[in-house]
Length: 365
Image 1 (tube, one colour):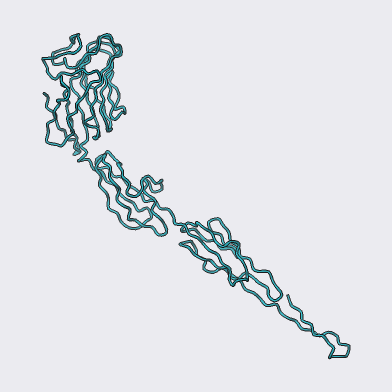
Image 2 (image 1 turned 180 degrees about the vertical axis):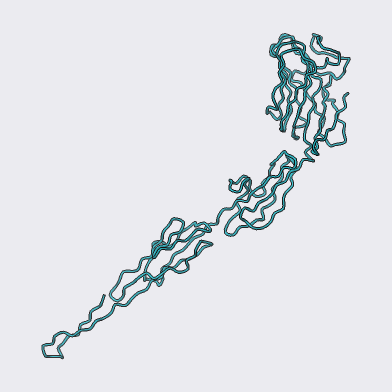
């Protein structure tokens, strides 16, 4: 029985397991001080077995393999001689929660027809298939990538009477416990501080609750760029990286609060405003004043004095309580004045009878 080896690369703990394929599947064992997944049991799609014995090779198929350099190469299985495009599929689910980074398959075959070996992890192609159109002994196929899920090794041949031999499968995976990355929280115009958060690779974890604030704004969530769309909500359960020592910045996104701006005319009866309020005005919106008109967020409100009557004329005076920008609900007042109409007295010609003269009053406009 083969010894399995533990490998360390660039301080990132990676474990390479040489998975010996045994005659009776399900008895593979793992040695090593590091914590590791259960032994990967590769099961065959056609219920055949693989031998781990260099000299005592047993074949389920009727034809004894031939054409190999030594008995130690006679390790594998043979599918039916009448099958064209025959194949062997081996699968293992022991590593489904780990990130697989490399798979090495050492294989041999006994004729010159086309054959290939391919690998998938989690249902996704893993590296490129290894194709060989000649008899081969102990050929190493190396597949690289970064995926999680069940491992499937598939061998395919275009020939009949073909035997396919797998000497070993080596799986390299990242030790999740030692793979860490950091999420950095950016206020993006807000105030306050938040500590970086450490995550374990490929393990879901809630984001730290937002503690940034921004005057006149409500926290909307996190984006991956300063001006990006919200990708994650507050305290969302996330799994953001499979890369050790990765640094991932998240930028706070802010939604302006919205307020109502009210309008009133003063004194009562001296004039009117064209509308009593503008709703849903975002925080920070600029207020533009132009004589008897005020424009806010694309809406213009005008102040109109009352019509003159028998005693008074009316005019617009000014606006009061006008902010430069909207920072909350407020009331803007249109101020009006009135002017009394002046009386001019004059005497009519009295025909030398003053007592009969009529004094008339006329309003000056």
